[in-house]
Length: 144
Image 1 (cartoon, rainbow, N blue to C red):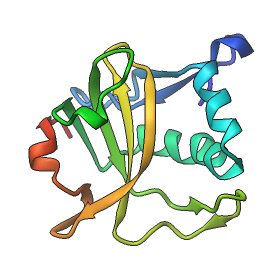
Image 2: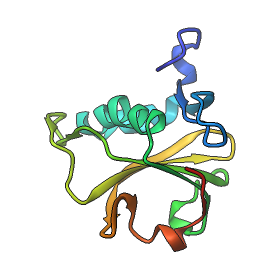
Image 3: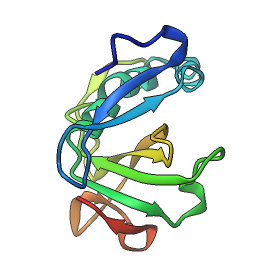
């Protein structure tokens, strides 16, 4: 949920699960610039940011820490955590709500300054559909 005290130009702050104690005490920021970029790519991605990203941060199926793959890293900071989950819906490019993608999970990447810098659908592990494919070699440790 966005913080009511923040300014529009600052971006938004979402509450996320703190994996060390399971409380909703972790604050994740999405910058105004990132929100503008998402908005320029269409209503489907805007709705993912508005509905799916908060859902994954507040009710993840797992949280990983330590990114090992270069393509997962933030260009302006160090990747830190990856929140993974199964959303209750997905969105078409036009913003229309549809059923979630079968065999896929949703990942939200957060850097070491608690800034969400990327989020997307990815293939699930066929042995555990709540985890991303190759999670064993992609991340250093699983926190939740």
